[in-house]
Length: 315
Ligand SMILES: [Zn+2]
Image (cartoon, rainbow, N blue to C red; front, side):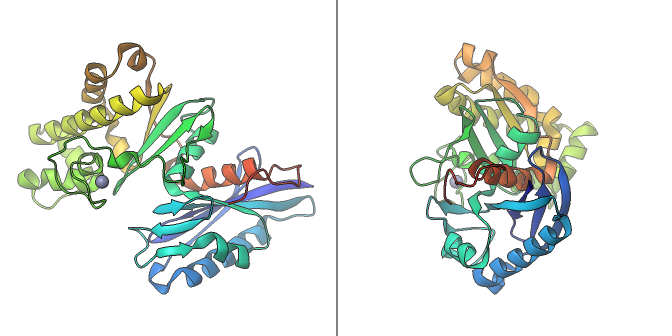
């Protein structure tokens, strides 16, 4: 009996699930509104219904659902699987998500935060294929991160490792939602770019600023160079910690990589050990919005391999 996996990427506005073969081929997909305001139980129920529907479409006489992986936004405590809080899921505090899923699902599953899932997606099917040591920054509304060491995602003591967006790049910088000041997220997220551009362009978006930079407008070009500078400060410190082979940049802001790559490289070179930065490859993510679902499926497959029946880890 062949196996397939489902990777569920839970977002603040929609959730997306992919049915994936052990080789990483996407068989089918489903997407639905999260409606987080209805509470965790309702969201879990809707996700489980979507998973059942998707599984029913993909199941054949020779192919059965082996396990489901979930990528969840916010502060997720492991191995208990408790969502401590989530900026994207208002009202979710100390939600025992693993316990809720265990009651609702009749297949094994794994849980991780969405940034770690996206990082694993790039490891399995994307820009970090074949890498053993790398880190990924997702530059979206916020800045998410994931760290892979010796082929394994870094969880730390309680599952909170990899909050790279809250690396401080200016101790006197603007306040951050995490309670600190001058975090990378305040300089390299789409939200931050729009904020920094406001004095020049009024209410705008990171994408519009990128278009302005490509038209040759100096303030927009300088702003993206500044993004590269702050990214470089954070990434130099992070690279010094664990000597990664590559840095994967994902999220909508990474589409403007050409606008900040130069200042990022320059700052990396100036602020980290030469041999470390000499070997550090900078690459743009390849899985797009499928990264989270692919990575969640990959994690489920690692824990529940196609042929084996004994799980290697519990969520
Ligand atoms: Zn912060």
